[in-house]
Image (cartoon, rainbow, N blue to C red; front, side, top):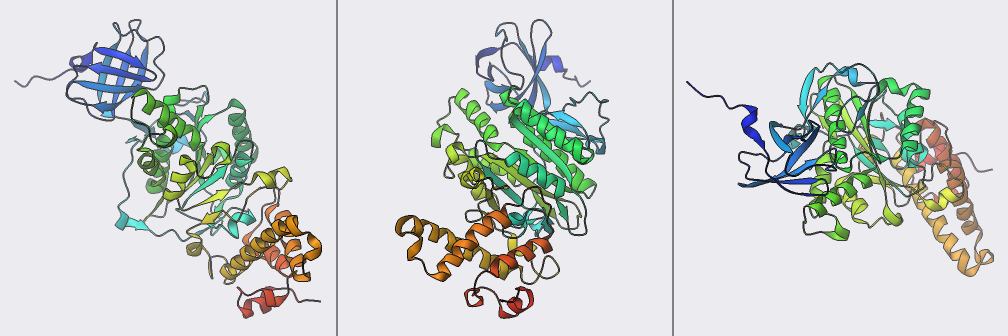
Length: 463
């Protein structure tokens, strides 16, 4: 008769030592990378953890609730023989969960339809559908010059004190795909303050968006180690809604800087050789496992679009976190401290901003046939106006020609009128109209990047 192995035979009391959020356990056998663990103290208190590293004789376990108060001699480790999973159901919409996927809104227990692994299923590159559907965010600097496309991953590079949260809340209120379909929103907050959490919750409730939001919340005073799971919980829920229920899902990840700090903390506790600025050398790979879960699949109506908020330390765009994020994602939206100080909202600096998939989402049948030429001319004219500002600071405005003064006026109007739209929700037609009105300040001979037929059709006549 075959003997069954009980869970008790996978219990260990061989903790060697504790380092930060990590436990080091000796003399373990048959332990797998990523396996879930239950840590049981002598008084019956239970915590959850996950195997970070295993070999023939030892395992390294990250503890989600922290290691404070753990008695090395009396604590029992129970290996669960399963990887990290989350319960999913359509009833998750409108609910608030912890960073580990546990309901924390006081509502009823979730009745799961499926229990899915947090690692997700990699999309076969051959099965990926090309992102090409225009998403209207209602924000001119994005829709007009850095167009977001369904299935894209686009980070927002912010700085301390800049209104990235307000910008994302506005996008959540206004974003829609062609045909007016609204998004289901999966919001993953990592290491945010209670004030920021209250802001998002209030915004969702006041606008009625909470009914289509799944909110995963990891606060600044929650266990740091939980932040490693939070974006993976969010993306697993998003994949379930997109590919099981054909929903268009917008995933908001805020703030990825806090996530990377958690990675660095774990790496330091494991005494790994650090990479740039102390971050682990595998941070690029780790970030890619999150960002690459955006996209579309051939034959499926649903899609996952990612907007990532990232606070640049010291406003340094060459810092490892924004630097690696820029390599993996398909562009970036950069917020400007200079524009913010001048009261321009949203303070989007269009010159360093970029959407690599813009050309796939614009043109006839999507936005308008003049969109590409129009965007090129706006960008070039604004860049010239910015260059002239620097020249004026050296030689004075008196040395400028009449056409130079027109470019200066164009740059000022562009920032005040086109970029600085406040809370207004603009259609793409309205955005294009405003752009053409700004270009009308310049002589038609200066509009060298636009086809003559578009100038005749859309540009107001000179008086």
